[in-house]
Amino acid sequence: MYSKKHYGYEDVEPRGFVSLMDLYENNYLRFKKLVPDVHALQQHAYSRIKGCMGLHLSVIERSRYTTTLRMTYHFTEGANLYTEPDLKVRVYHDACLVEVIAGHLKHGRQRLDHLPADAKLYKWRLNRFLYKWLGFCLHQGHTFGLESAVDTNQTSASSATA
Image 1 (cartoon, rainbow, N blue to C red):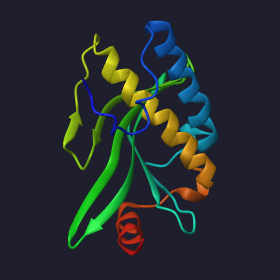
Image 2: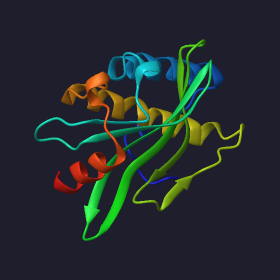
Image 3: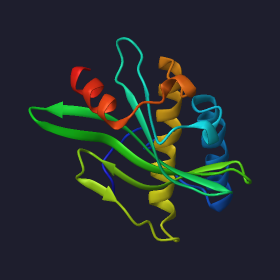
């Protein structure tokens, strides 16, 4: 059994494929508020709100029907850069779904790089976490419009001063 020290998904258990798809749809609705036009998103984007951690998005892959992104915060400790949480999400434009397809949590100690198709429990937990995280980011006021596009050098410098 898993400990109760998870990232916001311990209060809900998966109920089946239909509820997982419902979660993907709800993630899409929240993601669209955070990123109103994912097609206009630059390769690297950064949202910074005074008094909050800067939120980083990086486009990994684009196709006609999907966009795969990396969503994370950057932490620095000495000369080392850490990303936490570090989620790879896929946006399905035609189906209006957002799904976590990989994730690194707990400072990389929980690495879920290749989720098998039948890993419903892990998918549920990661996507439940994304749902709560997106809500938290929206509550803080994060958004990714055209003004949030930055290059990699600015992103690294900004996160080092945050």
